Length: 234
Image 1 (cartoon, one colour):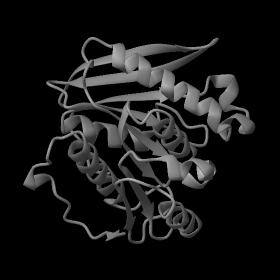
Image 2 (cartoon, rainbow, N blue to C red; image 1 turned 90 degrees about the horizontal axis):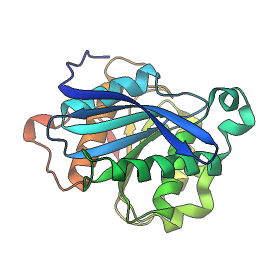
Image 3 (cartoon, rainbow, N blue to C red; image 1 turned 180 degrees about the vertical axis):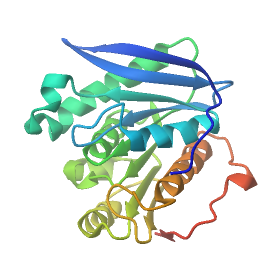
C-alpha cells in the first residue's frame, strides 16, 4: 500500500448510542470537508482494520471526512452469529448516520457509506431504508446478496468493487448488480483477491471510491485524480 500523508486537522474518538449499546468510532475531519463517509466493516472487523484505515486516509486527502467505527461491541464481535446479523449492523449504521447529521462541523454535508464484506450488505440496506439521507454507497469485496430482496429498492448511486480473482464474490456481485436500480457500476480489479493485498490494488479501490463519492456528492474529481490502472467495468 502506498503511504498517505494525512491532511486532517481534526481527529476525534467518538461514542454513538444505539439503544443499550455503544458504537465507538474514529472521526477524522479535514479542512473544508466536501462530504462524510461512514465505514461499515465486515466479518467482525472494526475501526482498526489496516485496509479500511488506508482507504480512509486517501479519502481524507481528497477532502472527505471519515468515520471508522466498531459496529459490534467486543462481546458481539466474538459471536459469529452477530457478524452476519445484518439488521443489527443496519441499526448501528443508521444511528451513526443520524449522529453525523447532527454534528456541528458536518451538518449539511452529503453522506456516503463504504462497506466491506458483510458491512457492504448493511450499507446497502441502510441506503434502501434512508435514500434521502445516503447519497452514495461503495462496496469493497462486498456481499450484496445478503440483502437480496432489498436490492431492487436501492436507488442510491452504488459502486461495487470486486477482485478479479475473488471468484465466488465476483459471481455474487454480478448477480446482485442486475437487481440494483438507480446509478450503478461494477468494477473488477484484475488479479486482485478478496482482501486486495496485491501491490496497488487497495490504492485503486480508494481512488475509485473517492471518485464515486465526490461525483455523487456534486464535486467533480480533478483530472489528476483519475486512475492509471486497468479495471474492467460494467
